[in-house]
Image 1: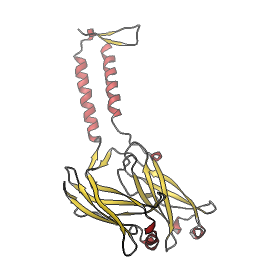
Image 2 (image 1 turned 180 degrees about the vertical axis):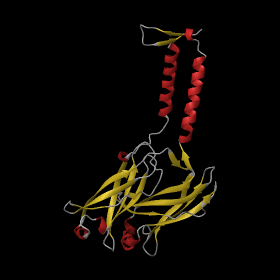
Image 3 (image 1 turned 120 degrees about the horizontal axis):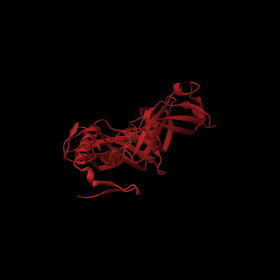
Image 4 (image 1 turned 90 degrees about the vertical axis):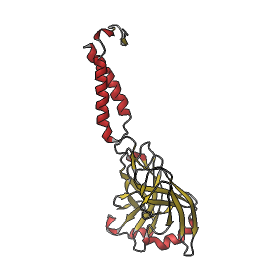
Length: 289
């Protein structure tokens, strides 16, 4: 009986320490915050919202999916968007990522968007999915020599290069850009196609080009007019490989079984005579031979 209690005590300690190392992977919508957004009306009459969310938690997020409800100038709920995905995966704590949200006539509660002509009071956002993950993207990638300018067509442009500074091959890279005005609000976004070559060897570099108009073709004229209002931008590198696990799930059961087995072997080697429980105390004294 005494040996059984000691075994239970040691295993409890092992389990407590072990599971503290496993990340919390439940849904975490409360760790997503919409920082700013801007809205536009396209030539087709649809409402388009460009915004930015931030992971304000302490855990990586696999992806962020959200939707919004648009309110008219007299604060009446008029339309609800479909779910949209922010433009990044494996979002690190405190990382910011942009999104684009559409409101079409079929999203309107009354099957039309005529109310937009009188203005939009605000967009109410809700996060529908933000699951934690132990994965994170290969982070030995750096952007350098990036420059911005407005070209002859009055389009805001960003060009630069990406370097693989690590020891592994990075595959299928693309760049996400967020453009801000003087108040720090998001007014445009863009994301590149996969960069060439598909696989970037250690030490290799490749180039990219982004614009303020390419992501939303319906707003080419509007974003061209906004080029002069862009005062800052942020760039985020995305890659599909390698995706690195902080704590691989496949190792959990074998490691736990191994630790438990070693503990049981050690317990069996402890003579029962060395375990002395004092009935008048809550402490357990292990007396050496």
